Amino acid sequence: MNNAQIIATYETILSITEQMLQAAKSNDWNYLMALEEDCRTNVAKLVSANPAPLSGEFQQRKVEIIHKVLADDAEIRNITQPWMGHLQGLIGSIGHERKLEQAYGSDSHN
Image 1 (cartoon, one colour):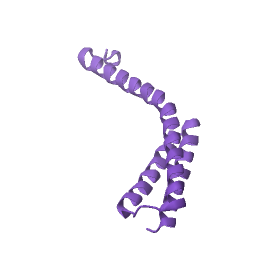
Image 2 (cartoon, one colour):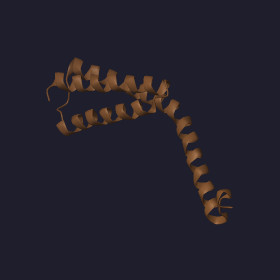
Image 3 (tube, one colour):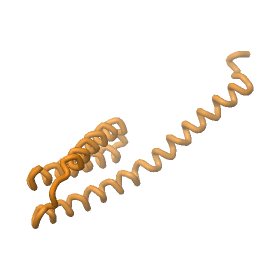
């Protein structure tokens, strides 16, 4: 990958993380997961390319993009952490109910 291709890939990742943030804000979890996969694919493309260090303005733009991606990621986590905690609580509750049903039987069997 040349410098322009590397920056274009970083720009794509930035665009995806911005879309991820919007999906998180609108509680569109399915779209968020699909975007997360797209992001992962683009990051893997960068890693596998093993690009040479960027020079001058390209390096500066890369740093700007990374800072914005990290800020978006932090905001996404702030939105998704409470939701994940709620989801874990629901899953734990369902698991607890199943254990109780197995141990004591359910009312529907009486």
